[in-house]
Length: 222
Image (cartoon, rainbow, N blue to C red; front, side, top):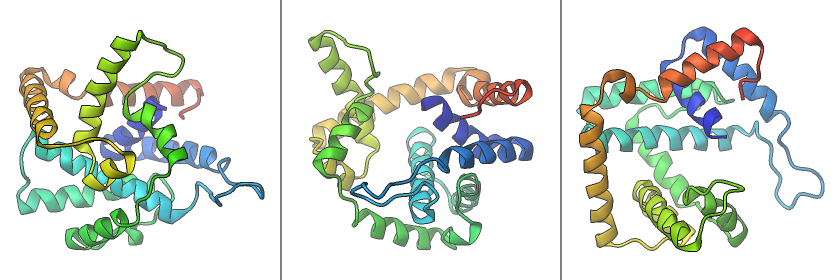
């Protein structure tokens, strides 16, 4: 799941047209198998363009937040360019270009209206919590170590989440945790800036090479 998600981001932001076409086909093939049945309590299909638009918006917003934290605030020209670069993220799913907001102001309006609709019930919260805490399925750690890992991962996850998501996930967040998150990000940013370019581009560069290998050998892409 992590490989597929990060490969999607790598292809959307840095992939060639051939890589995008191959990955789009593979994603569509998988999404065609995801749909609700007559017995499902919630009707769902992975080709739902409104849901895919929300996925696309979250990925774009996440990119903006990462840029702000690791590089700094964008000037108007950079912000507009980044906004336009967000378009391929949707076309790799099932979202047409005309669904993307016309400018950043329109996106901010869409984002806030969508946040106001966010609701996470107990069942979904129970499903999402291990993901937010970075737990690996099938790996059982000693209780004390698991708590330490959970706290560290939830600090990073919580730091990137909008407050509405923190509330819906019932994650405690206060000024002290915000300051701790910012300190951790400063350390990561400093170390990252000292690394060679090849390492800074990891894992995107490696994933694109792996994608080419999978295409060449006929292995599944997702």
